[in-house]
Image (cartoon, rainbow, N blue to C red; front, side):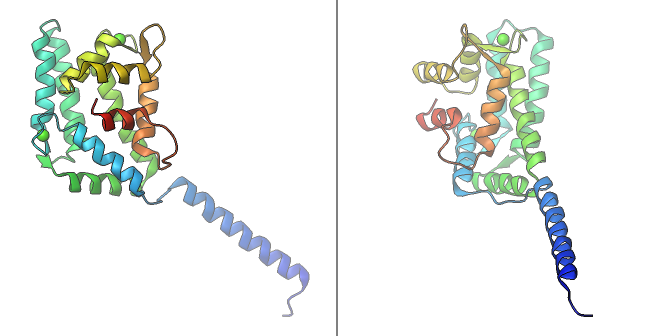
Length: 211
Ligand SMILES: [Ca+2]
Ligand SMILES: [Ca+2]
């Protein structure tokens, strides 16, 4: 059969159709690679979560965090059990990948694999992590983080430099002395997933300055 202009047009449309269809599939399961900047931020996350500074992430770190809340002496046993249950789950499944301890290299490799496998599942995992964290931090359960709640959490995380913690709190632009939980969640998701180095990042800055 001779190729007429109509055949060619129909063929082009067909190619266009399949390319678009393939394109939309790609958007749904974005498997693009992590870049160096993102991997560096995951390394910073690892280091800032090594609460007992022994160079490795393990359950010991989160137990130290939980102990701080226990020692506060004003939370009910019920509330403390909730915190412990929530933080143990997050730590075990998200940070330690259900192992006893994880090295920095293995941690970033795990994050890279999760990120590259499926962006939307990765984002949901990060949301689960930071939401759980905020629920613990929000002691009076009003969906806002007061300076007192923020500092309590920083101390529990062994970040005891009050001046730096203050600076980090102010970086969130608190309104009437409080930060909406939703804002912290969004900032953290950006920190853990944004590949573009040019956007300023509250969490990264804080980790760089050692808050
Ligand atoms: Ca540790
Ligand atoms: Ca609160």
